[in-house]
Length: 469
Length: 104
Image (tube, rainbow over all chains, first blue to last red; front, side, top):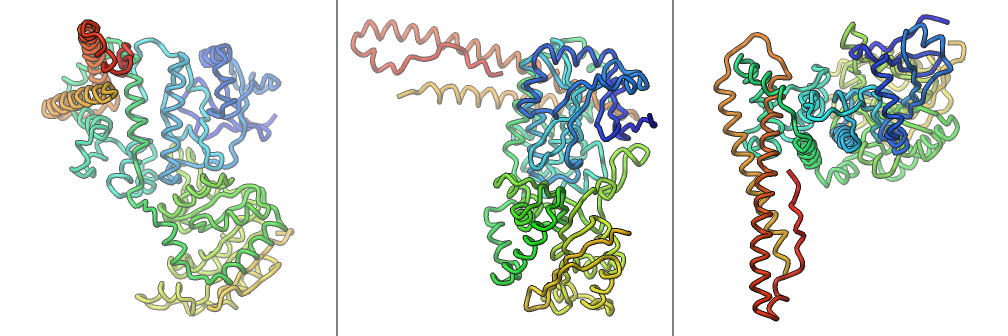
């Protein structure tokens, strides 16, 4: 047996750690954690949570005695693998909202069954397409009468405050969150919260008051008071009232730039004629039908239109990467409404999520998680090559490296979109041409098919990496 | 002519306002009484806030319970006088659930 491959992000709970073994996702449990797990099984609660898809499918992995011995664990569990691991700072507003509701609903369900959740980390939620699922089975345990909600502040920092920063402050939470992995503290949120929102009852109770109390907690008087408070039981009714209040507040939040007309706006501002759109659709469909990717990356997915086309033509599952958070949210809503196996994420191809956290390994980079067997990069190349000054050869190294085959759209200089990018700046892109693009692509792959699809000269390339590479 | 739900709503609104006012006062006092300290324990503020929630939940339950007892008592009185008035009883509205709201 080889060395044990523990997940770098799984170190906080000494009683339970996750590891990857022979392609299986395993979880170790120490004696105390194993006892809690046995209780969940006996109460029938675990089976219900799995059946109703609240938590990831989990079973005992008693066959792996060797791993159990080597890890010194009292019990070993196996989890179903999530199709694509994503992090809250990559989620769209709607996705974080769904995750928050999932966390609160699961917690309320647990309390009703005499159980509780020992933490409220947003990283314990993963998405299977647009459906949230809770993955940290070890944080489910028995509820003890009168106990406090120790993870209250964690819930606020990792779920509520980022949502409020977007809904009420007009900021996209993703960038803030990526720079502050444990979430946005209430005190930081309070500094940017507009005055007019502060006295809304839900906002005051769950955002303003926690910040004021947190500030007061810097004093000795307050910390002595908290010590005294901890001796008194916390009524379950108050616990539930807090969860209910948070659930009501979360459900009332809307993206600050959400408009009913957003779809119409997009449809009317895209630069294709109907015939051009049909040509592009046919090309993408032919590619997806011929290659049937199991996990397709739609780089620059916009509102998910071509993800949907690829799924209809034969792709099994799509991860969308879109740098504009509000647009990615429209893709999320499209996927949810139409039940697509699509997970749109807020990813900037020119600045993808880095590896970060403890040891710089706790949260993996987007590229390290990229295991795609097909790719679409439509109307995105010019944003990177012209908009972000990325040299064509480097761009093609990355694009061709992301998946064994794909479709990439080249947008020439005479296209109005490129003209707009160049309008207010010096044109330093003398090497930028279709011929240069095609020869760089041909040096890295075999071009299966190509077709000019617009009057302005946009051209689609379907390429396949050489097997010998 | 079911006037009960509106009545209940207004009670909830009054309670919500009372809770908000109490929180404003407590939080303001807590914030002004604070002394700068180098070490910040993120759990301390949360504990204090939960303690306030606990007290408020208990107070709300007491107020709601008290209120529902008054309602029940007055309903009994009204019912008695309505019965005494004979056929006017029908205008007293549908039977009212005597359980307290129960929502903290």
